[in-house]
Length: 416
Image 1: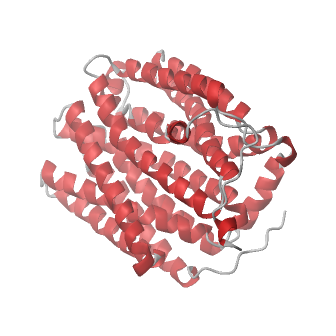
Image 2: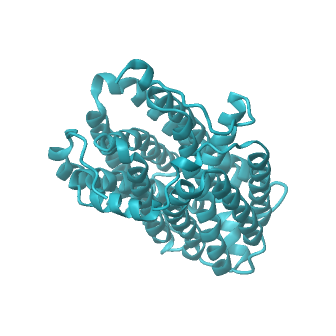
Image 3: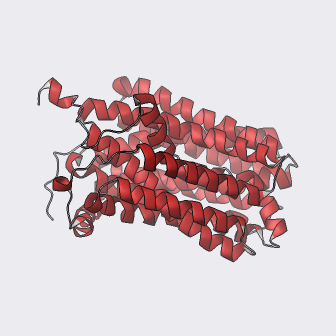
């Protein structure tokens, strides 16, 4: 393949009515739905439990249903955008997201909130999937890789800013107001997308068998033990991170007595560690290789999870617990990009379906572990530390089993 082909920029079928920086901002905002929807109301979790007379486990269920929606919605939105183009599915998704966010704000009990979060997550998944699809429509090769790398920076900033914004909003409103703000964001993005986002997939390139094709590819991927090993390793490490996400508000606010605003700052600090580690890994991958960086990341997150359990059982205090939280989140910055790169390398022609399977496994595992951190209520950090410890040791076992298969094979034939 020639250099121009590797760096090609494809002309859009309908010009995006945006300058390049505006286009990047819009696509970045669409890709931020997962952390935005998940993290902005984290500082308000204890007040949700109080206002709705619900247990900590019941409130964390609203995180679970959101993740289920985000995972399942990707499998729906992707084929729909292949069949009907990018513009209509993303506009429908934004409209549903806006309405669901308003209904979250009006929820009379935690079970209604959980259902609305499921719908909100599924609708938000359209933005995640289709923003990537638009980039793939417009760019290829190195140009696409660079654009995706820039979007990763935006996605890294989202978990830093979202809980901080959520904590500051609680100065002026309650948790219901946070969901109204999310509704406003959805409405604004819907308006901007309707006015400015052009169609990037021409009718002749659309397929009417997107769902059937997708399931054929997924069957092939599930049979690949190397791919599934890397996918599970990535997912269980994300599960450890999500155990921190769902459990840390109760640990930091209820057990150690910090305010929602201070929790938001600590959460943002940990997210800075994740971004810094991922950028450091990006600089070192050429010299160390993705496999070695993945191994370092898994070893580091395992050490951090072990340290967290020791700190909790020894009643070592907030500083020790926060250091371990920081190490867990930072280590994931080495695990996520390298596990993903190694898993996708043999499948360049079905990277979208492979990415969807990785995302589905990631979000569903996160959904499964979220309620576990609240089984002891909001008076003990042991459940959060225990879930993280179990998951990181599973990651070690899965990676050890997968190591002999981790060498990148030739691209596998695709049979539909």
